[in-house]
View 1 (spheres, rainbow, N blue to C red):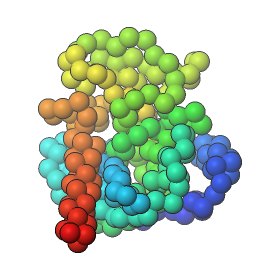
View 2 (view 1 turned 135 degrees about the vertical axis):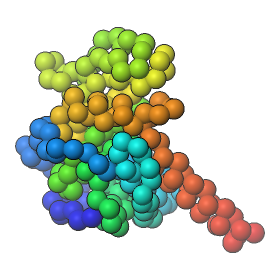
View 3 (view 1 turned 30 degrees about the vertical axis):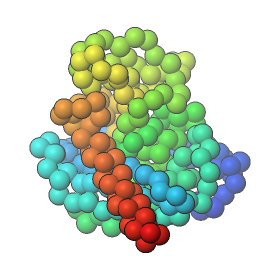
View 4 (view 1 turned 180 degrees about the horizontal axis):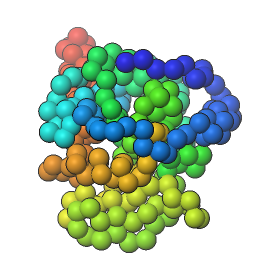
Length: 231
């Protein structure tokens, strides 16, 4: 899977913020596909001074796994709120680069445009990949919302002033909602529809949840291997 090299990742926080502001002009929130047949989920786990980025590709809507790839990358930046992509983006792109079956839509464990500068990890990497992406986060980073109904599929709009950033979506009855926001080349209604079709038994959509389990297993295997070497 190819991606564009839009900028260097070796920048200062001030330069990173300026890049986000410039990239914001390139975001498209229009649906850019006819039918979704393949989706992917991406996530990152940490072990000591390394990041493990993982991607799992699924048939859609039956959610059968058809490919898994990962990439281990050194941690080069501390965590800075609002600049997560500059920490995790390079490792995720390298994992995505290994994917042979290209997805129609990619779900990220993080924000899309529901970000102070509209440049969450799903949006930022969507621009690099030039592909539809959705942010699926467990907590709010930006925007305000009213109460959400208790039934699966109920949602409240996540807004900043009059601007709609995403939706606070109930994915299971009386279970804490998640924060869905379009990343790039997709609109909010289609983002919500795809997320709900990816909900099976748990709060999180299958692609994101399975990617999380995948990278944590690699992390645990790596830790076990290191412990055996040290002992």
